[in-house]
Image (cartoon, rainbow, N blue to C red):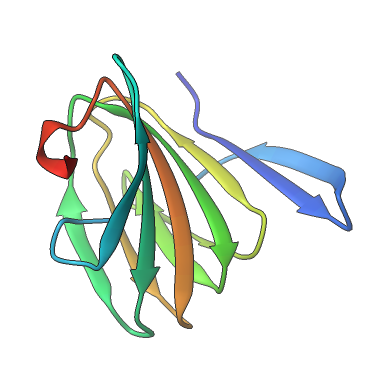
Length: 114
């Protein structure tokens, strides 16, 4: 499954391209359903998320800030409004280049984020 990045500018889709957090960061559960978790992160500038992978599919939305994200060794930089779909078991890591607010959706539920 390809990783889909969707970029919006002034609420308009300007293109998509195939390209391309963790419990020690401040987080808040947004909602939890039977099969998914919705999590919000406040990430300090220069904070790093070490490379990891998990069975969960993940959708990351950069709400504010600039976040450098690496997936399978390919690095990209994402900003306000960017959405990244991350397949199950794909190795990924990140670094906040500025203070960031991120929103993640995980499926199935992340039990550790209760």
